[in-house]
Length: 333
Ligand code: LMR
Image (tube, rainbow, N blue to C red; front, side):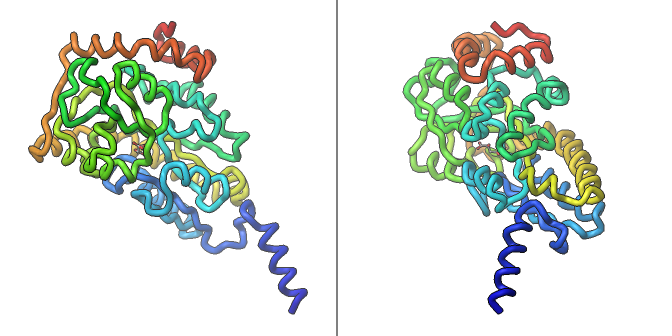
């Protein structure tokens, strides 16, 4: 009996978490913080559908949306510990991992449009950034798009001075912290699952996010004014626990890579329309007032937030800024 127990313990130790051969089916827990009815939510379900189909059921993907398994920071820790196998956090949340370079993607008005963003991430900078995760036991598989941020509060945010003294929820990026400070706001990091209540009770005054997140989390119902500023981009990195992923049988990995490539194309192809539709639904709800910046107002925001670019060098380093400048064909200080 004792011998048997020792043998079982040894198997448990040596089998976790790299060896997945014995598991039947192989389970991939995919945790994320947004609703199913968003680009990321739909992307995760598409990956599940394709992964299970291509592996003939040898792999089962369990998708946990809406922070139902873990909140923002906890899910990254859980991935490193192997309690979940796959995530798609916004790249703004990678600093606790020591991968601050990802925050360069949060620079205000960095990407002209979704196509420019998409092209940039398919270039060398996307791969370079993923290399930053390797020493953390994490592998990057793909970048998923969720369009551009709007900004909101219970007062109209039209001119930079309108931000003076208001508490803004941010998701984690020090770059966002900086550009909100540039306009006089007081940024505060908070988990996504806590934002609605914080807005409702006045723990924070405002926030930034994309239309699909506003709509599905009902932020627009507790914010009187939204500015469709599209001042920064929201992107996700689909990441896996490297030990788990590298321990998969090669023939399974091949099918999962195919499923991920297709799920990525699908997610990125719907992101723009999903957000445009969400914005229409927010408008139609009549629960908030939407504001659009004139070219002069936009210029005033850009000027006010410009110091973030100079500051960013010390935070994310020159290398990633140079890579982005080259990719986007822009001058960055
Ligand atoms: C946020 O925390 O605002 C976003 O990262 C949520 C998400 O994943 O879209």
